[in-house]
Every structure is written in C-alpha cells, then in structure tokens.
Amino acid sequence: MIRVRDLSVHFPGFSLESINLDVKERDFFALIGPTGSGKSVLLEAIMGLIPMDRGAIFLNDREITKTPPERRGIGIVYQDFALFPHLNVRKNILYGVRYHAIPGKEAEDRFQALVETMNLSHLLNRHPLTLSGGEKQRVALCRALILNPGVLLLDEPLSALDPLLQDEIKNLLKSLHQKLGTTFIMVSHDFSDVLFLANRGAIIHRGRIEQTGAIQELFERPGSPFVAQFVGMKNVYSITGVNGRRVSLGGLDVHLERSVPGHCHLAVRPEEILCIDGGMPDHFSNDLSDHLPDHTQDFSNRFSGTVHRLVNRGFYFDVFIRVNGVEFMAQWTRRQVIKKGLEIGAPTWIAIPERSVHTF
Amino acid sequence: MLLMPEVSDLVSTIKERAVLEALGRSIFTALGATAVAVVFGTPLAYIMARKTFVGKKFVEGLIDLPIMIPHPVIGIAILSLFGRNSLWGELLSRINIEIMGSITGIVIVLVFVGAPFYINTVKAGFEAVPPRLEKASQSLGAGMTATFFRVTFPMVWRNMILGSVMCTARAISEFGAVIVVAYHPMTAPVLIYERFTAFGLKYSQCVAFWLIIISLILFLTMRFFSRERPLS
Image (cartoon, helix red, strand yellow):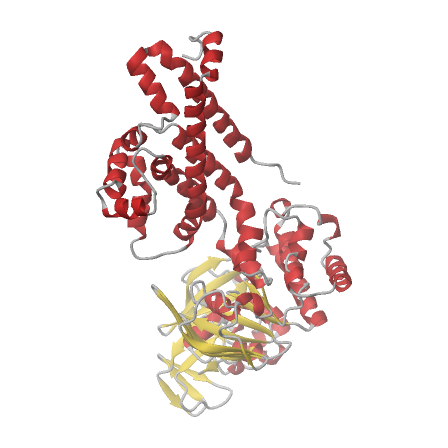
C-alpha cells in the first residue's frame, strides 16, 4: 500500500535517516516514539508537505515522491485539528469536495452518512472556535474521510483531548477503521493507545526506526533497550553471563523460559514482578495474579530484597527494590502496599516468572 | 485648532481650486502609493512571515529603515538614486519618466514612507495564520493558489485593509520627503507649509482642517474594518 524507501530529511539540529516502511492495505499502522523523535516529520514527508533530501515514496506501487500533496490522495488529521476558523462546520467538512470530482449527489450522501456517524448534525452551522476538543476532532475526521482517501494520516489524534474524550475518540477511530477499511497511519507517543488501536507499527528514536512489526510483537519482543523501555519494560539490564537457561545479572542468577544464545539484554515489566510472602509459593498474595494465572506456580526466580523507594501513583505504587545491588521496579496496588506494610527500608520478597523475563 | 477657523473660511477654502487640487493630489498619490505597496508588499510580507533565508534580518531592516530615518533624507536618497544626473534617472528619462517635480516622484516617495506600515501589518497577519491550516488545505486537494484565496486571504484581509489605511494615512501626511523631491505639483501638506510661511497661521489652518478630516475618516474606516465579528 505505502512503501517508503531510504527516506532522509534534514533540518538544522534534526534529521530523519534512511527510513524504510511498508504499510499494508487496511493496516492501522502506528509510528511510535517520544516527543522530538521525528514521527510527525515522517508523517508530513509522506504527505509531501516537507521537502525530502533523499528517498522514494510509493502508494499502491505508484511513485508519489514528486507528486504535490494535493494530488497524492492521502488525508491528514492534525493533532490540533487544523480546522478553518473562518468557515462553519458544514463548509469545513465540504472544503475539499470541489477538488475531487465527486458528483453532487454522492458528495451529499457521503456528507450525510459521515455527519450521522460522527454525530455532528446539530453542529453544522457552528464555527470551530465554539466547539469542544472531541467535536473538533470529529469534524477534522469527517473533513478528511469525505474524500475517501487511500490512506489517512493521524498526527497524535488523542493528545489534545482530555482522558474521557480520549476513550470516545479511540473507540470512534477503531470503529471507523473497521467500517471503512481505509488504511490508517497514526503517530503516537503513548504505547497503550497503540496497543488498543493499531495492528502494526514502527518505533522511531532520534530520527531512525528502531524496530518495526506487529504491535503484539513489539510489545512482547522488543529488540533494543530503548524499545523495551518504550513498551513499558522499565527494568532493562545488561546480562553479565549466560549458562544455558540461566543468565547472570549482577550477583543474581535469573532463570529463563528458553536459552538465549547471543542475547545481551534482559528486561522485565514492573507489573510482572510479583510480591510474595516469605518467598513461599503457598503464601503467594499478588493481586495481579488474578489475570496472570500461568505465573502463579512459576517461582524459580525468587529474590529477597529491600524497599528503597516508594512512589505513590494514585491507584498503585512504583516500588523500587534492591536485590544484591540490582534494582527492580515493581508496580503493586495500593492495597498490597498497605496490607504488607511496605515502607522504605522494609525487607520484601519478589518473584519474577520465567516467561516474564525478556531477552534480546 | 479645529474650533478656531470660521465656518465661512472653511467653506471658502474647500472651494478654492488650489486647495481642492492639492487635497485631490494628496489622496490620489497616497492611494497610488498604497496600490503599489499592496501589489509588491503582499508577497514580500508573505515571504517575510513564512520563509527563513540568509539576510532576512537585513531585509527586515531595509523595510523598517524609512520609519527610522528623517524623511528629508529619504527624499534626498531618492533624488540621488533617480535624479536627472543619476544612472537610473537617465534611464527613466529616456522612457519619459521624470522623478523630480512630478506625480511619479511623489508616488515613489510615498511608497517608501508608507510601505513599511503596510508590509509590517500584513506580515503580522500572515504570521497569525498557522501554517498547518495551509497544509491541511493542500491535503484536502487545494493547490497553493486556491489555498491562499480560500484559507490565507480570508484570515488576513483585515490586516491588508488595516495596512492599506495606515499606508494611505501615512502617505497623505508626508511632507519632509515630498518637499525635497516635488515642491510642485503641490500636495496638501506642502500647500499648508507654503501658506503658513507666506501668509501665516490663520491662512494655513483651513487647509489643515480639511487634511485632518480626511485623516480622521481614514482612521475611522480602519477601526471599522479591523473590529472583531462575533462567531455563531
């Protein structure tokens, strides 16, 4: 569907280097990375809105590298919606119709269908400045989708919205993608949004693609310490020695599910570090075990350590535990922390199920 | 000063052929200078608002220069550049364009003194239009020209009117540079000066009154067009 080959863009102080991407038809593809990593620049380069220094872009095997943005057949919805403030909602939505040779009847049908789907009928005569964030987002989506773009680019579609609206727009995007079958490419810095919405993605860091693949694969099998951190594996370590299914981590022996020749990093998600009583399986008491039934009997990695920092996150705590000089960060519920009387300096036992230890 | 002249004096002054011609000349040359500023200043303002290039600060300085330096100096500079003994002046006189003592000369002077006001006002207008709106327009199929007329222009036309009025008002009131380049044909400020030096305060007041009224109308127009409209 969309192929990007060897794309490079240079600005003073920033560059995108040799980007290669393959987005398939009907994909919900996510470009993921922290702020300033270059994902929005890549989106605008695909759209043709910024000049490229090198590379080629293909849409359905047709090279569009030199095609002006207005003739690429690609739509974009910006983070700040970019609605025209001097036009009302109706005129905003119909803005592009005259450039796409859409017969009047068909344009009207598409308009009515989209306005109904997006629940915008009562807002058609309003100006963008008088709309809420969610309403603006729906108008921006409507304005792009009425043209039936081959690909729709979404630049951080959720970041300008409050948490309640984010859920509403996430559901809307998911249902629109399923209903319309349009290829979506979304830029996001939040992996949890990506997990919910996208099926494939690429992680960008400092203008380069770190890893690309199915979202589940990125989530479960990160290929570098950066990707591991980015997908939520806050505990990332260099392995100091390997012996079959056992690796050395500082002074600790960590058991793995399978042997890992050639791998040199180890990562564990904080929510997969379990809190246990006295290191004994029969006293297992982690609330998270409710949704981790497979882990409950896996206690080959049991360690005794000391709590040296507690960060209250509201519904849960970040608990930093030192074990033989190695620091682990765990996320435990408020109830667990209070029930066990955890405080700085308190001894505690932790368990890391073998299948929760990721290596790369 | 507005209250001092007698109404009969004001009426008789406005009926004078020389006064009407001078006022008409002032308005005509000021509007002419504004038209030149709009045609050449609008793209320049767009470039200054949107593009980054080497020497941009220098160009900005050049645009603002006529605001900072004494206006007789502008007149002298224009005469030096386009006077009869200069290369440009000679080239222009070959195609029968005279700068010294001509309407063309007055318009050129007024462009120099008025254009900075137009360019800076319109530049501020372009800067206030988020580039993303233009990009969104392009993504919806509009080319650059269509984007300018459907997105950018509707958002800056008030600045263009405002800049035009400021440019016109500044040009109408210009005296220092005009008197160097063209004492004749007389514009209203030169006529006021001449009457003041030759006949005294009272004789010049009536012409000054009418010039003030014209300037007032221009500024009221400016305020009318620059007011915010409520959104539905």
